[in-house]
Length: 239
Image (cartoon, rainbow, N blue to C red; front, side):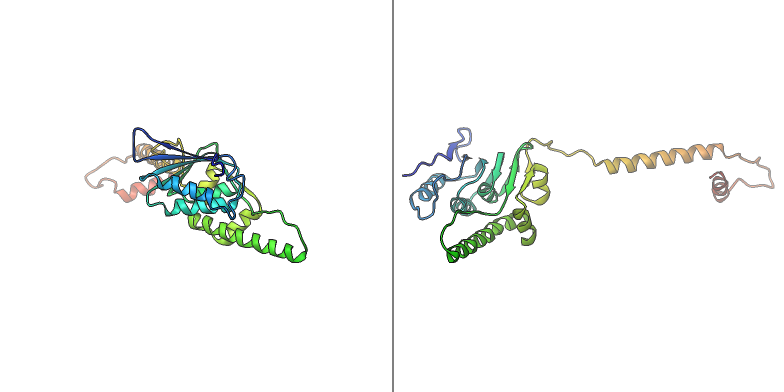
């Protein structure tokens, strides 16, 4: 059996039904293509328990076939899958991250998407086949990104063409993650609301002061009290 060093399961002793999966390093240094042993080993580990799982990812990527199979297994897992990116989720590792029911990123972590690549040799026909294969692999990766982010395929394709690196805030903005870890539980009141409230308070205070300075004519039996409309007219003259 090939080494499975890039994944490691840990059971939470305080919560027996909860497990943690750590994905570190290169995703399958040896390709899973035409490999029935390693994927079966990962699937057996995944099925060996039940209940929610937390997946910690710190990987620069690796084999896209392995990433696709791990993504599928996590998507089919019948319980919640919380993905936490604490270092980097790049290339194939970013595909696995999209399988999370919720995806959280550390404020210091990175996520990167880019076009798939391969090494090919042969005549022009072999090169055309390699290009077609890469195009299809790209479309399959976009499928995972689109399901998670809701972004258009054109937008996602452009992000991959540009080899886009995202910090946690950018990934949250684009929908690649759902939450940034270690943030305050209750967000502060928006600054705009405070500004609006303060401006209204200052305006009301100023009007009160102006009303106090408006001279009040003496009241005689023949002359009634100043009407509210007259007071507004005097205030208008002071502007």
